[in-house]
Image 1: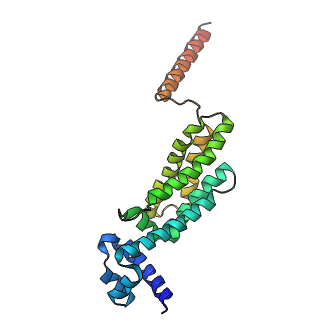
Image 2 (image 1 turned 180 degrees about the vertical axis):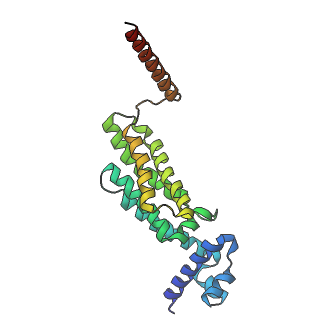
Image 3 (image 1 turned 90 degrees about the horizontal axis):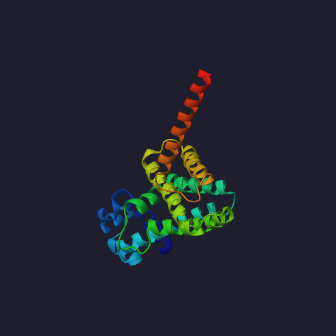
Length: 220
């Protein structure tokens, strides 16, 4: 192998090992054995396990970030939500090892993490939401709050689906979008806690009035 080919081999082997055993459970000896090389070869290319892990994490971050950014770059509001959900679920399906490394084996040694990627997505979504909020007369400053909620919902659902794999990703995405879209379509400009109780009370009053009116009509 050339130096470049050996490096790519070690990255691929390290990726699989980190996904299977975690950062702490993987050793340079293990990686070298899988690649059928001596330990000094691993040190020569990456300086150690930490260096290899950093390269693996960075590649996964860049891949997922490209997918998410592309998914929300164009289309209608609903299209963007659908595309983002499908982009993340497709990444989970196609690059399971990479996603497991990002969400299950966080390392304090890394400057970048899955949370960093989510923050990038939140920033992009909040920018889009801010424009929509302004158009509809909502407070633009609240866009980041809603963006956090949307990104968090899609992210947590993807982590759940990592193990379940049922139903199909298209079905999962459709239900996530169903919740997101219907929630966004019927936003209140000034929501308050307890409003559902007030709504129930008003409904009860309406029912009581209807009963009274019916009784009066019957008596007449």
